[in-house]
Length: 115
Length: 109
Image (cartoon, rainbow over the protein chains, first blue to last red):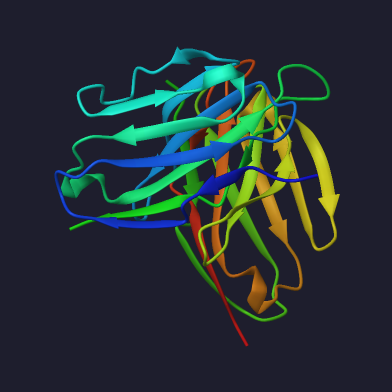
């Protein structure tokens, strides 16, 4: 069974440019999460989807960040315009509501560098 | 929200040594996971353990939910065990995980 897939793995952009990240969760997982991980820290939630509905986006900086999960499967996270402080690793995770448990599984992440 | 504290922050071991990593959390949880983040940044699931004890090879974990802590044991450590170990908790359903700051483990030959 394939794990969580993310692309690209690495992205280098100039500040003020737009950037987009893509995530495909584990097949059958209806909950999808985007986390941000700064250097030396643990991941922190940006947004959580249950199916196609964003149910927790309180930590998403909505002035420049947007996300969508069309058809309740894969998801895209966008930043426009990017700032120097956005340099970080963006992680996608998925889980299944219900039995056997709500264990979350993470993709390999996208490492963003803003110059 | 829930607070998660991990100790020690850094740990250096000689290959073959054993170690115990601790995770304290501030409120009741129904999801607790241990991860190993390898040098390439991938978070690898080690245990899903909101309560009880589990073992997988040289690794084992125990969570005492009533006392709000979990322990990760690594026996006969190998250089490939190096990396950052994260404890993460969730308080209900599919709520997001709250991560500790991690324990950075270095195993030297």
